[in-house]
Length: 102
Image (cartoon, rainbow, N blue to C red; front, side, top):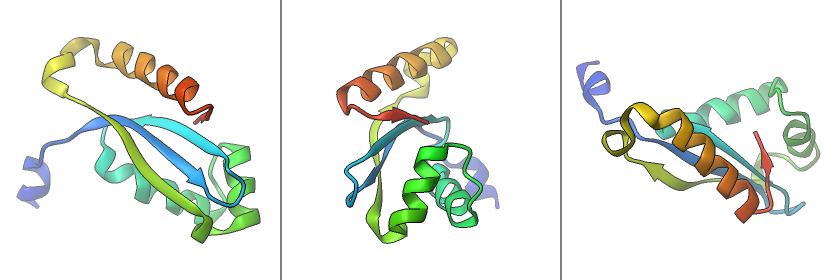
């Protein structure tokens, strides 16, 4: 338990891709190490709040999806402006990947 509490938490931007449809969704997370499990859990349960992601998951299944970290943000470097930096980087990746923001 103490190892979990002492681990370095990395925030950043991630992409979820559907190989079958070609759709891409981009999101941000304060802890990149846990976001994939959380996403897949809600998608498997059919309770993900983003409708296009959930409907594409329902149509093509988990096998069609991949998760990737597209940018890690250094907590120490961004400090108190983290939220502003995170929003700016998220907007950048949405545009760069022609993705849907989640």
